[in-house]
Amino acid sequence: MIKTLVKRLWLVPVALVAWELITRAVDDPFMPRPTVIVARMYEMWFSGPLILTDEAVDNFAPSIIRLVGSWGVAVALGIALGVAIGRTAWLSDYIDPLVEFARAVPPPVMFPVFLVLFTMGTQVQVATIVFGIIWPILLNSIDGARNVDRLQIETATVFGVPASLRLVRIILPAASPKIFAGLRLSVSLALILMIVSELKGATDGIGYLLASASDRSDMPALWGGVVVLGVLGYVLNTLFLMVERRMLTWHRGARRTA
Amino acid sequence: MLEIDNLTHVYGEGPTRHHAIDGLNLSVAEGELLCIVGPSGCGKSTLLRSIAGLIKPTGGTIKVQGELVRQTPANLAVVFQDYSRSLFPWMSVADNVALPLRRKDMTKQQRREAAHEALESVGLAEAGRKYPFQLSGGMQQRVSIARALAYRPALMLMDEPFGSVDAQTREDLEDLVLKVRGHHQMTIVLITHDIDESVYVGDRVVVLSKAPAHVVGDLKVELPSPRDQISSREHPDFVHLRAEVGRLVRGVASV
Image (cartoon, rainbow over all chains, first blue to last red; front, top):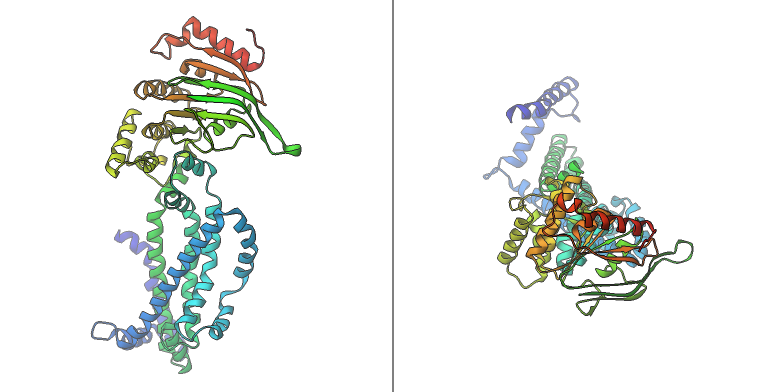
């Protein structure tokens, strides 16, 4: 256990030391030393009475809530619409071209449009994230639901599995390997769009902290934000993979023996 | 029990049109084990899918226990050839067997017990918590037989059920079918392309012609029971019958 951890992670301290040495040698105010960044992060965010300072709580929490909330909305919408479209032949004939067009729009492009359309703040941010990340979920759900093995559906028909049960116990699990492929993409996209949506017109959030640090040319604070984002992305991805691993055990097993 | 009257089915139209079944008449008595044999691609599966209500035949009628088949009859179960696709890989073996029981008026506990009992009767009492991919092909097909048994159908259809397993497993599964039919009161229609199998397992063998399929032979099998893989197959009646069925399948009828 410890041995594998060391094996996998030994490069991290090496890279940090190298970074420290290089920034010391270069001595450029735009490239602050990691020790300076960490000291600054501690002072700004982690020196509060319960570790987190007010600034950290007031900015990290809204970002994470928006991120997780929007992701939840996109997942629910994407899977529900995707399964409905994938299981209904006439619906997918009409909707496929629309979906293909809409997903070709680069997500950040819609941000200024939403700024005008919605109330400044959370509405715009949620709209930007949801619109940006729903496409991989939707397309993969359509694909997964459409390609459920015919014999599996026929088996359900023969044994009179009721419609609701058929959706939950047969169509969704059968489509789940595809759906998870879409979800994996959406997790990393959501983080990107959260930051993009907070850079302008926001009054709190990690993106807001980055934007104001940039305005003040406060390089250690800017780099501190980047580090927090990196850690956040890593944690989210790890959590997601844990869930995926649990949910798709059968799939890996079935593929190995097939 | 099962009445098929002038069944006809045509797939598609134009140049891809395929006339699969033409004026097929067949009747199966309560409790009978009927084997249907015919050359490959003769429309056996179309026949089975029509009885199961999975396709709507273009002509003729099918009645199960006097009821016209429009959709799958509630008292009918199917064992498909391709167990690896017909069992749900994301469910444990016990859940696969218990799922069809959800439409019946049973508590969770009753469903679990029925599934266990069915698995026990196919010799897989210990496999309930496993997943299908952890079992061999023959064991997976036992699970689909258990699923059909737990459902307690009046009519069990089997579509080339032993077509994808090795010879030894095949014999074991044939004997399993003979064993379970003794315990459960049900009618079985088993479709196969294996002539020996049809004679060994069946009470009666119906031979279909090449497509478009119709009945070209209908033979009663009167072998001493219980049947046995070695002695039944060397019985003079068995040898005679398999030759008879073989000729019918090849289209050189002798009767």
